[in-house]
Image (cartoon, rainbow, N blue to C red; front, side, top):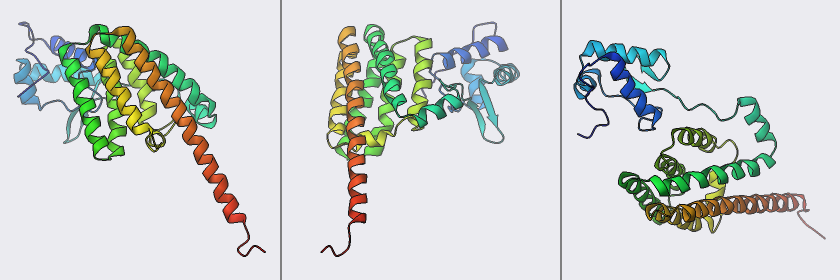
Amino acid sequence: MRTVFEKVPHQRTAEAAAHQIEGLILNGVLRPGDRLPAERDLAERMDVSRPVLREALKSLETRELIASRHGGGTYVADVIGPIFSPPVIALMERHPEAVADFLEFRRDIEGIAAFHAAERATEADRAILTAIVDQMQQAYDADDARREVELDVEFHHAVGEAAHNMILLHALRSCYRLLENGILYNRKRLYNHPLARNKVLEQHVEITRCICAGLPQEAKTASEAHIDYVKQSLEEAARLENRNAVSELRLKHRPSNPS
């Protein structure tokens, strides 16, 4: 069975065990909500006694990196805080112009992530990205827009991970929390655009190609072009929705038996 946990060095201290788990969280290997193996199993994998492991887990729980659920195991805590405070998010929701600024921010930060990913991606990173775009193609072929929406964020997470910069990784994850919750805009609107689904798939494939080929500037350009297209498509979808809403009002207001 594959495992991300390794045997703790010869001293086998609780501090060493905790440090290993901290590293897995910091590097994004363990994500919020991931369940840790059962105590006996984890102690065997890390080659420490169960008392030592309990002490390590208690230390991590005190620092709010993991959380225990009564009768339900131990999980990685929600360590990805919001990039903005709730009051600022509420302000953004009330002012649609914030969406354009959010997309501009994403364009810049994701371009940097794609650039570094093309420089630093390992064979495993390239395999992950390729697998995700393959799943995107399958979801597209099955006309499963819901799955495509889920894979969209997963793809951008994977690019951030392939950049191998801890600060960039967690900044991106915090940024994507707004996407997952649909706070600034509903991604379903994008995938309901008549041409967007195919175009977005093509763009993700191109970003992956550039990263896997080790082409940093091309990867950055492809990533920026993707966000430019998302911005344009969302604006077009909003205009179409507004036209439809106005037309519906006109229809309702028309007399039933016009003379």
